[in-house]
Length: 428
Image 1 (cartoon, rainbow, N blue to C red):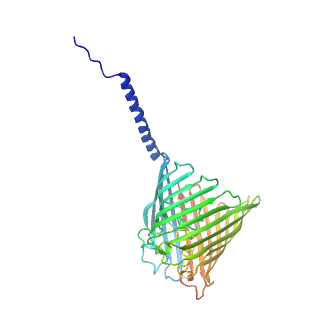
Image 2 (image 1 turned 30 degrees about the vertical axis):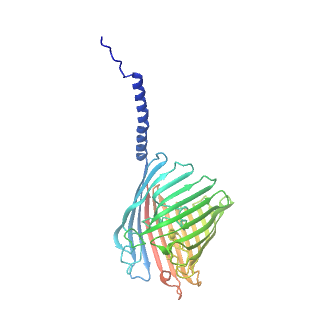
Image 3 (image 1 turned 135 degrees about the vertical axis):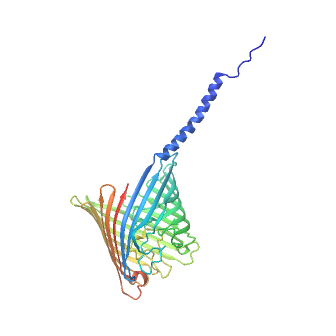
Protein backbone atom coordinates (compact mmCIF):
# COMPACT_ATOMS: atom_id res chain seq x y z
CA UNK A 1 0.00 0.00 0.00
CA UNK A 2 1.30 3.36 -1.04
CA UNK A 3 1.71 5.72 1.81
CA UNK A 4 0.70 9.32 1.04
CA UNK A 5 3.45 11.82 1.86
CA UNK A 6 2.44 14.63 4.12
CA UNK A 7 2.51 18.01 2.49
CA UNK A 8 5.18 20.46 3.66
CA UNK A 9 2.92 23.40 2.80
CA UNK A 10 1.55 24.35 6.18
CA UNK A 11 -1.05 27.11 5.75
CA UNK A 12 -0.06 28.63 9.08
CA UNK A 13 3.61 28.86 8.09
CA UNK A 14 2.77 30.28 4.68
CA UNK A 15 0.51 32.86 6.27
CA UNK A 16 3.22 33.89 8.73
CA UNK A 17 5.80 34.27 5.96
CA UNK A 18 3.43 36.27 3.81
CA UNK A 19 2.51 38.54 6.70
CA UNK A 20 6.18 39.17 7.45
CA UNK A 21 6.87 40.04 3.82
CA UNK A 22 3.93 42.40 3.72
CA UNK A 23 4.98 44.10 6.96
CA UNK A 24 8.51 44.51 5.59
CA UNK A 25 7.33 45.84 2.25
CA UNK A 26 4.76 48.22 3.72
CA UNK A 27 7.26 50.63 5.33
CA UNK A 28 9.33 50.62 2.13
CA UNK A 29 6.28 51.44 0.06
CA UNK A 30 5.17 54.05 2.57
CA UNK A 31 8.68 55.53 2.62
CA UNK A 32 8.75 55.79 -1.16
CA UNK A 33 5.31 57.36 -1.14
CA UNK A 34 6.33 59.77 1.65
CA UNK A 35 9.50 60.78 -0.23
CA UNK A 36 7.54 61.35 -3.42
CA UNK A 37 5.00 63.39 -1.47
CA UNK A 38 7.78 65.54 0.07
CA UNK A 39 9.31 66.19 -3.34
CA UNK A 40 6.03 67.08 -5.03
CA UNK A 41 4.19 68.91 -2.25
CA UNK A 42 6.68 71.75 -1.88
CA UNK A 43 6.27 75.43 -2.59
CA UNK A 44 7.35 77.33 -5.69
CA UNK A 45 8.12 81.05 -5.71
CA UNK A 46 8.99 83.58 -8.39
CA UNK A 47 10.25 87.14 -8.53
CA UNK A 48 11.07 89.79 -11.11
CA UNK A 49 12.72 93.19 -10.87
CA UNK A 50 12.93 95.59 -13.80
CA UNK A 51 15.24 98.55 -13.26
CA UNK A 52 16.60 101.61 -14.99
CA UNK A 53 19.87 102.99 -13.60
CA UNK A 54 21.67 106.17 -14.62
CA UNK A 55 25.15 107.11 -13.42
CA UNK A 56 26.87 110.43 -14.15
CA UNK A 57 30.53 110.74 -13.10
CA UNK A 58 32.43 113.97 -13.72
CA UNK A 59 35.63 112.19 -14.79
CA UNK A 60 34.06 110.19 -17.65
CA UNK A 61 32.78 111.50 -21.00
CA UNK A 62 29.58 109.42 -21.08
CA UNK A 63 26.73 108.75 -18.69
CA UNK A 64 25.89 105.12 -18.03
CA UNK A 65 22.34 103.95 -18.70
CA UNK A 66 21.36 100.40 -17.82
CA UNK A 67 17.98 98.75 -18.37
CA UNK A 68 18.15 95.40 -16.61
CA UNK A 69 15.83 92.60 -15.55
CA UNK A 70 16.32 90.16 -12.72
CA UNK A 71 14.19 87.00 -12.80
CA UNK A 72 14.17 84.19 -10.25
CA UNK A 73 12.37 80.88 -9.93
CA UNK A 74 12.66 78.85 -6.73
CA UNK A 75 11.28 75.62 -5.28
CA UNK A 76 11.42 74.23 -1.74
CA UNK A 77 10.39 70.63 -1.18
CA UNK A 78 8.42 69.33 1.75
CA UNK A 79 10.24 67.68 4.63
CA UNK A 80 11.26 64.01 4.61
CA UNK A 81 12.63 62.80 7.98
CA UNK A 82 13.70 66.39 8.61
CA UNK A 83 15.38 66.78 5.20
CA UNK A 84 14.32 69.25 2.51
CA UNK A 85 15.80 70.71 -0.66
CA UNK A 86 15.77 74.30 -1.88
CA UNK A 87 16.81 75.52 -5.32
CA UNK A 88 16.69 78.94 -6.94
CA UNK A 89 17.71 79.99 -10.45
CA UNK A 90 18.60 83.63 -11.06
CA UNK A 91 18.76 85.22 -14.52
CA UNK A 92 19.95 88.78 -15.16
CA UNK A 93 19.63 90.41 -18.57
CA UNK A 94 20.39 93.86 -19.97
CA UNK A 95 17.58 95.29 -22.09
CA UNK A 96 17.70 97.81 -24.92
CA UNK A 97 21.04 99.68 -24.78
CA UNK A 98 24.11 98.35 -23.03
CA UNK A 99 26.14 101.52 -22.52
CA UNK A 100 27.64 100.87 -19.11
CA UNK A 101 30.72 99.15 -17.73
CA UNK A 102 31.05 96.22 -15.38
CA UNK A 103 33.90 93.94 -14.42
CA UNK A 104 33.48 91.63 -17.42
CA UNK A 105 33.45 94.50 -19.96
CA UNK A 106 36.20 96.78 -21.27
CA UNK A 107 34.14 99.99 -21.22
CA UNK A 108 35.53 101.52 -18.06
CA UNK A 109 37.40 104.27 -19.91
CA UNK A 110 34.15 105.66 -21.33
CA UNK A 111 31.25 104.68 -19.07
CA UNK A 112 30.77 104.48 -15.30
CA UNK A 113 30.46 101.03 -13.74
CA UNK A 114 27.04 99.47 -13.12
CA UNK A 115 27.74 96.07 -11.58
CA UNK A 116 24.89 94.10 -13.17
CA UNK A 117 26.40 91.54 -15.58
CA UNK A 118 24.31 89.35 -17.88
CA UNK A 119 24.24 85.95 -16.23
CA UNK A 120 22.02 82.95 -15.58
CA UNK A 121 23.11 80.82 -12.65
CA UNK A 122 22.09 78.68 -9.72
CA UNK A 123 21.69 81.41 -7.12
CA UNK A 124 20.87 79.01 -4.29
CA UNK A 125 20.84 75.24 -4.01
CA UNK A 126 21.10 73.54 -0.64
CA UNK A 127 20.06 70.58 1.51
CA UNK A 128 18.12 71.71 4.58
CA UNK A 129 17.89 69.60 7.76
CA UNK A 130 15.70 70.28 10.81
CA UNK A 131 15.64 66.81 12.38
CA UNK A 132 17.46 67.93 15.52
CA UNK A 133 15.53 69.87 18.14
CA UNK A 134 16.01 73.65 18.00
CA UNK A 135 18.58 73.23 15.24
CA UNK A 136 18.63 73.86 11.50
CA UNK A 137 21.42 73.06 9.05
CA UNK A 138 22.07 73.96 5.43
CA UNK A 139 24.61 72.45 3.06
CA UNK A 140 25.22 74.05 -0.31
CA UNK A 141 24.86 77.42 -2.03
CA UNK A 142 22.89 79.81 0.17
CA UNK A 143 22.01 83.44 0.81
CA UNK A 144 23.51 83.80 4.28
CA UNK A 145 22.87 86.79 6.55
CA UNK A 146 22.75 87.25 10.30
CA UNK A 147 20.69 90.45 10.45
CA UNK A 148 17.53 91.67 8.80
CA UNK A 149 17.91 93.94 5.78
CA UNK A 150 19.34 96.51 5.35
CA UNK A 151 21.70 95.91 8.30
CA UNK A 152 24.01 93.47 6.46
CA UNK A 153 27.17 95.38 7.38
CA UNK A 154 29.51 92.38 7.59
CA UNK A 155 27.70 89.46 5.90
CA UNK A 156 25.10 90.09 3.20
CA UNK A 157 23.69 89.26 -0.21
CA UNK A 158 24.25 92.71 -1.80
CA UNK A 159 20.55 92.38 -2.67
CA UNK A 160 20.37 95.84 -4.26
CA UNK A 161 22.42 94.57 -7.19
CA UNK A 162 20.68 92.35 -9.72
CA UNK A 163 23.18 89.49 -9.35
CA UNK A 164 23.22 88.53 -5.67
CA UNK A 165 26.19 87.41 -3.60
CA UNK A 166 25.78 83.88 -2.21
CA UNK A 167 28.02 81.53 -0.27
CA UNK A 168 28.86 77.88 -0.85
CA UNK A 169 28.83 76.77 2.75
CA UNK A 170 27.76 74.52 5.57
CA UNK A 171 25.77 76.55 8.10
CA UNK A 172 24.11 75.64 11.37
CA UNK A 173 21.82 77.59 13.68
CA UNK A 174 20.89 76.47 17.20
CA UNK A 175 18.34 77.92 19.65
CA UNK A 176 18.62 75.44 22.52
CA UNK A 177 19.54 78.16 25.00
CA UNK A 178 16.73 80.48 26.07
CA UNK A 179 16.56 83.69 24.04
CA UNK A 180 19.82 82.76 22.32
CA UNK A 181 20.66 81.95 18.71
CA UNK A 182 24.08 80.46 17.97
CA UNK A 183 25.20 80.49 14.33
CA UNK A 184 28.23 78.95 12.65
CA UNK A 185 29.18 78.59 8.99
CA UNK A 186 32.11 77.16 7.09
CA UNK A 187 32.45 78.84 3.68
CA UNK A 188 34.46 77.29 0.85
CA UNK A 189 33.43 79.66 -1.95
CA UNK A 190 31.98 83.17 -2.30
CA UNK A 191 29.94 83.82 -5.46
CA UNK A 192 30.41 87.55 -5.95
CA UNK A 193 28.08 90.01 -7.70
CA UNK A 194 30.33 90.62 -10.71
CA UNK A 195 29.59 87.26 -12.36
CA UNK A 196 31.60 84.29 -13.60
CA UNK A 197 33.00 86.19 -16.59
CA UNK A 198 34.69 88.80 -14.40
CA UNK A 199 38.45 88.46 -13.84
CA UNK A 200 39.69 86.72 -10.71
CA UNK A 201 39.04 87.45 -7.83
CA UNK A 202 36.03 89.56 -8.84
CA UNK A 203 34.22 86.39 -9.96
CA UNK A 204 34.66 84.26 -6.81
CA UNK A 205 36.65 84.04 -3.60
CA UNK A 206 38.14 80.58 -3.10
CA UNK A 207 37.52 80.42 0.62
CA UNK A 208 38.52 78.55 3.77
CA UNK A 209 36.55 80.80 6.14
CA UNK A 210 34.70 80.41 9.44
CA UNK A 211 31.79 82.59 10.57
CA UNK A 212 30.52 82.74 14.17
CA UNK A 213 27.55 84.82 15.29
CA UNK A 214 25.68 84.71 18.63
CA UNK A 215 22.55 86.77 19.38
CA UNK A 216 20.76 87.22 22.70
CA UNK A 217 17.27 88.75 23.00
CA UNK A 218 16.55 88.11 26.68
CA UNK A 219 17.67 91.60 27.71
CA UNK A 220 14.56 93.71 27.11
CA UNK A 221 16.18 97.11 26.46
CA UNK A 222 18.46 95.81 23.71
CA UNK A 223 19.43 92.90 21.50
CA UNK A 224 23.04 91.79 22.02
CA UNK A 225 25.13 90.32 19.20
CA UNK A 226 28.70 89.00 19.28
CA UNK A 227 30.55 87.81 16.20
CA UNK A 228 33.84 86.51 14.83
CA UNK A 229 34.39 86.42 11.07
CA UNK A 230 37.60 84.62 10.15
CA UNK A 231 38.27 85.06 6.43
CA UNK A 232 40.83 83.10 4.44
CA UNK A 233 40.56 83.80 0.71
CA UNK A 234 43.12 81.83 -1.28
CA UNK A 235 42.78 84.07 -4.34
CA UNK A 236 42.19 87.27 -2.36
CA UNK A 237 44.88 87.29 0.30
CA UNK A 238 44.60 91.06 0.84
CA UNK A 239 41.07 90.51 2.20
CA UNK A 240 41.99 87.60 4.51
CA UNK A 241 41.24 89.05 7.95
CA UNK A 242 40.03 88.18 11.43
CA UNK A 243 37.19 90.40 12.69
CA UNK A 244 35.75 90.29 16.22
CA UNK A 245 32.84 92.50 17.24
CA UNK A 246 29.99 93.29 19.60
CA UNK A 247 26.71 95.06 18.80
CA UNK A 248 23.89 96.31 21.05
CA UNK A 249 20.67 97.67 19.52
CA UNK A 250 17.14 98.34 20.70
CA UNK A 251 14.46 100.81 21.64
CA UNK A 252 12.74 102.10 24.78
CA UNK A 253 9.16 103.48 24.75
CA UNK A 254 8.79 106.97 26.20
CA UNK A 255 5.06 107.33 25.42
CA UNK A 256 2.26 105.38 23.78
CA UNK A 257 3.36 106.36 20.27
CA UNK A 258 7.04 107.24 20.68
CA UNK A 259 10.18 105.32 21.49
CA UNK A 260 13.86 106.12 21.58
CA UNK A 261 16.04 103.90 19.37
CA UNK A 262 19.76 103.32 19.75
CA UNK A 263 22.65 101.23 18.45
CA UNK A 264 26.27 100.83 19.54
CA UNK A 265 28.76 98.55 17.79
CA UNK A 266 32.49 97.97 18.00
CA UNK A 267 34.73 95.60 16.05
CA UNK A 268 38.45 95.10 15.56
CA UNK A 269 40.15 93.63 12.50
CA UNK A 270 43.61 92.14 11.92
CA UNK A 271 45.39 90.41 9.07
CA UNK A 272 45.07 86.62 8.80
CA UNK A 273 46.27 83.60 6.84
CA UNK A 274 48.51 84.66 3.90
CA UNK A 275 47.55 88.33 3.91
CA UNK A 276 50.73 90.16 2.89
CA UNK A 277 49.62 93.33 4.70
CA UNK A 278 49.76 94.25 8.36
CA UNK A 279 46.24 95.25 9.44
CA UNK A 280 45.18 96.60 12.81
CA UNK A 281 42.00 98.69 12.42
CA UNK A 282 38.76 99.23 14.33
CA UNK A 283 35.11 99.83 13.48
CA UNK A 284 32.62 101.90 15.49
CA UNK A 285 28.95 102.71 15.04
CA UNK A 286 26.76 104.86 17.29
CA UNK A 287 23.13 105.78 16.55
CA UNK A 288 20.43 107.61 18.45
CA UNK A 289 16.96 108.50 17.26
CA UNK A 290 13.25 108.40 17.78
CA UNK A 291 10.42 106.49 16.14
CA UNK A 292 6.89 107.89 16.28
CA UNK A 293 3.56 106.45 15.15
CA UNK A 294 0.47 108.43 14.17
CA UNK A 295 -3.17 107.79 13.28
CA UNK A 296 -3.48 110.23 10.35
CA UNK A 297 -2.10 110.08 6.78
CA UNK A 298 1.41 110.09 8.28
CA UNK A 299 1.62 106.65 9.89
CA UNK A 300 5.24 106.58 11.04
CA UNK A 301 8.21 108.91 11.30
CA UNK A 302 11.74 107.86 12.25
CA UNK A 303 14.53 110.40 12.80
CA UNK A 304 18.06 109.22 13.52
CA UNK A 305 21.58 110.64 13.90
CA UNK A 306 24.49 108.26 13.26
CA UNK A 307 28.26 108.13 13.49
CA UNK A 308 30.22 105.39 11.73
CA UNK A 309 34.00 104.98 11.65
CA UNK A 310 36.15 102.54 9.68
CA UNK A 311 39.69 103.21 10.74
CA UNK A 312 42.44 103.62 8.18
CA UNK A 313 46.14 104.04 8.80
CA UNK A 314 47.20 104.48 5.17
CA UNK A 315 47.43 101.92 2.37
CA UNK A 316 46.02 98.46 3.06
CA UNK A 317 45.83 98.97 6.83
CA UNK A 318 42.12 99.82 7.04
CA UNK A 319 38.90 98.19 8.24
CA UNK A 320 37.09 96.50 5.32
CA UNK A 321 33.73 94.69 5.17
CA UNK A 322 34.31 92.84 1.92
CA UNK A 323 31.30 90.46 2.29
CA UNK A 324 28.85 93.09 3.49
CA UNK A 325 25.98 94.74 1.63
CA UNK A 326 27.97 97.96 1.61
CA UNK A 327 25.55 99.81 -0.67
CA UNK A 328 23.30 100.22 2.37
CA UNK A 329 26.02 102.19 4.18
CA UNK A 330 27.96 105.41 3.56
CA UNK A 331 25.71 106.69 0.80
CA UNK A 332 24.02 105.09 -2.19
CA UNK A 333 26.48 106.63 -4.65
CA UNK A 334 28.83 103.78 -3.60
CA UNK A 335 31.98 105.85 -3.18
CA UNK A 336 33.14 103.78 -0.19
CA UNK A 337 32.31 100.18 -1.11
CA UNK A 338 35.93 99.31 -0.30
CA UNK A 339 37.32 101.46 2.50
CA UNK A 340 39.95 104.01 1.36
CA UNK A 341 43.44 103.61 2.79
CA UNK A 342 42.92 106.58 5.11
CA UNK A 343 39.66 105.13 6.44
CA UNK A 344 36.30 106.89 6.49
CA UNK A 345 34.32 108.76 9.09
CA UNK A 346 30.63 109.21 8.27
CA UNK A 347 28.35 111.54 10.24
CA UNK A 348 24.83 111.29 8.89
CA UNK A 349 21.17 112.03 9.47
CA UNK A 350 18.33 109.74 8.36
CA UNK A 351 14.59 110.29 8.11
CA UNK A 352 12.09 107.52 7.30
CA UNK A 353 8.37 108.16 6.87
CA UNK A 354 5.32 106.10 5.96
CA UNK A 355 2.50 108.22 4.59
CA UNK A 356 -0.30 107.88 2.03
CA UNK A 357 0.59 104.24 1.46
CA UNK A 358 4.18 105.09 0.54
CA UNK A 359 7.58 104.84 2.21
CA UNK A 360 10.06 107.72 2.06
CA UNK A 361 13.74 107.64 3.08
CA UNK A 362 16.10 110.62 3.06
CA UNK A 363 19.64 110.90 4.39
CA UNK A 364 22.50 113.38 4.45
CA UNK A 365 26.14 112.29 4.87
CA UNK A 366 29.29 114.21 5.74
CA UNK A 367 32.39 112.14 4.92
CA UNK A 368 35.95 112.66 6.10
CA UNK A 369 39.08 110.56 6.47
CA UNK A 370 40.26 108.94 9.69
CA UNK A 371 43.94 109.34 8.85
CA UNK A 372 45.02 112.98 8.29
CA UNK A 373 41.44 114.22 8.93
CA UNK A 374 40.58 115.70 5.52
CA UNK A 375 37.17 116.00 3.89
CA UNK A 376 35.97 113.54 1.24
CA UNK A 377 32.63 115.20 0.47
CA UNK A 378 28.93 115.19 1.23
CA UNK A 379 26.00 113.20 -0.13
CA UNK A 380 22.22 113.51 -0.23
CA UNK A 381 20.07 110.40 -0.81
CA UNK A 382 16.32 109.99 -1.25
CA UNK A 383 14.04 107.00 -1.87
CA UNK A 384 10.30 106.65 -2.43
CA UNK A 385 8.55 103.27 -2.76
CA UNK A 386 4.94 102.14 -2.93
CA UNK A 387 3.40 98.70 -2.77
CA UNK A 388 0.82 98.13 -5.48
CA UNK A 389 -1.54 95.35 -4.38
CA UNK A 390 0.03 92.41 -2.61
CA UNK A 391 2.75 91.45 -5.05
CA UNK A 392 4.15 94.58 -6.68
CA UNK A 393 6.41 97.45 -5.58
CA UNK A 394 7.44 100.52 -7.56
CA UNK A 395 10.14 102.96 -6.57
CA UNK A 396 12.41 105.90 -7.35
CA UNK A 397 15.85 106.39 -5.79
CA UNK A 398 18.46 109.15 -6.12
CA UNK A 399 22.00 109.78 -4.81
CA UNK A 400 24.07 112.95 -5.21
CA UNK A 401 27.71 112.90 -4.05
CA UNK A 402 29.63 116.19 -4.02
CA UNK A 403 33.39 115.74 -3.61
CA UNK A 404 35.48 118.13 -1.57
CA UNK A 405 38.27 119.91 -3.45
CA UNK A 406 41.45 119.45 -1.42
CA UNK A 407 44.92 118.16 -2.19
CA UNK A 408 44.59 114.98 -0.10
CA UNK A 409 41.25 113.87 -1.56
CA UNK A 410 42.13 111.71 -4.57
CA UNK A 411 40.71 108.83 -6.57
CA UNK A 412 37.03 107.81 -6.51
CA UNK A 413 36.20 109.96 -3.49
CA UNK A 414 37.29 113.12 -5.40
CA UNK A 415 34.74 112.64 -8.22
CA UNK A 416 31.26 114.20 -8.20
CA UNK A 417 28.71 111.46 -8.91
CA UNK A 418 24.95 111.28 -9.25
CA UNK A 419 22.85 108.15 -9.59
CA UNK A 420 19.18 107.68 -10.41
CA UNK A 421 17.09 104.50 -10.30
CA UNK A 422 13.52 103.68 -11.28
CA UNK A 423 12.28 100.15 -10.63
CA UNK A 424 9.31 97.84 -10.36
CA UNK A 425 9.46 94.47 -8.60
CA UNK A 426 7.10 91.55 -8.21
CA UNK A 427 7.08 88.55 -5.88
CA UNK A 428 4.89 85.46 -6.06
